[in-house]
Image (cartoon, rainbow, N blue to C red; front, side, top):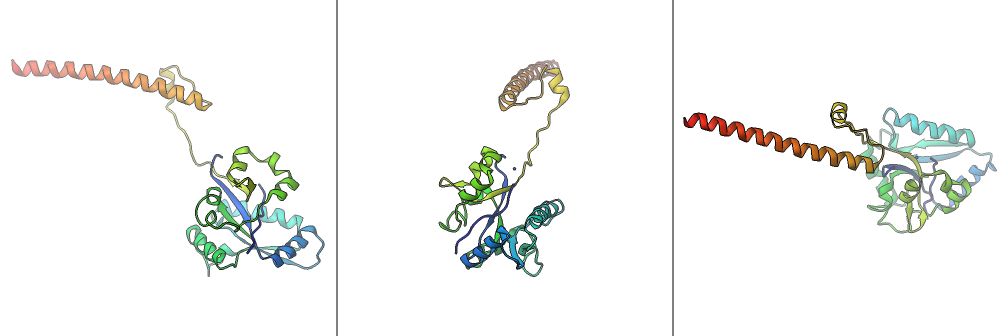
Length: 226
C-alpha cells in the first residue's frame, strides 16, 4: 500500500493535516483527473471527522474549492457515514483498521504530532513524501516555519497543513497591572518580566501580611495572658 497526501492550507503545535492515500491504480486515476485530461467522473474518498458546527463548514469550503478546480471529481467523506462512525475517537480507530487492512481512503485527516508518534510513525513506508507537491505549489514559502517543521519527518514533507488550532488564552487583571505600573506583555520576554515583577510584589505583600498577623497574634496572646 502506498500513500500520498492531499490538501492545502495555517502554531504552534496544533495543526490538522490532510494526508492522502490509495493504491497505485487509483493514484494514477486520480492523477489523471487532477490534470483535467479525463472526461469521466472520479470519486475521491476522504476521511475527516470535521463534522461539528464550524468544522463542517471549514471542510466544505475546501471541498467547494476542490470542486471548482476539478469539477469531475466527487468528494465523499467516509467518516460521516452513520453506519460506520459517530465521532472523532471512533473515526481514528476505524481509520487505523482500514490502513492496517490495506484499504485506505484517498485522503485522511490526522494531527501533526501523529506523524511522529503512534500508528503512523510506527509504520515506515505508510506515507509517501510530498516534497514534489510542496515544491510545485510553493508551499515552502507560503507556510509558517513551525508548520513546516511539524509535517517534516526524516527531512521530507509528509502531509499538507489545512488548519491550525490555537485554544490557549491569557487573561490579566487590569487593576493589578495598573497598581504595579505594568503594561500587558507582547512578547515572551515581556511576559516573564511581568511574572517576575508580580512574584516579587506578592512575596513582599505576603511578608507584610505575615508580619501584621504575627503582631496581631502576639497582641491577642498578651491580652489573654493578662
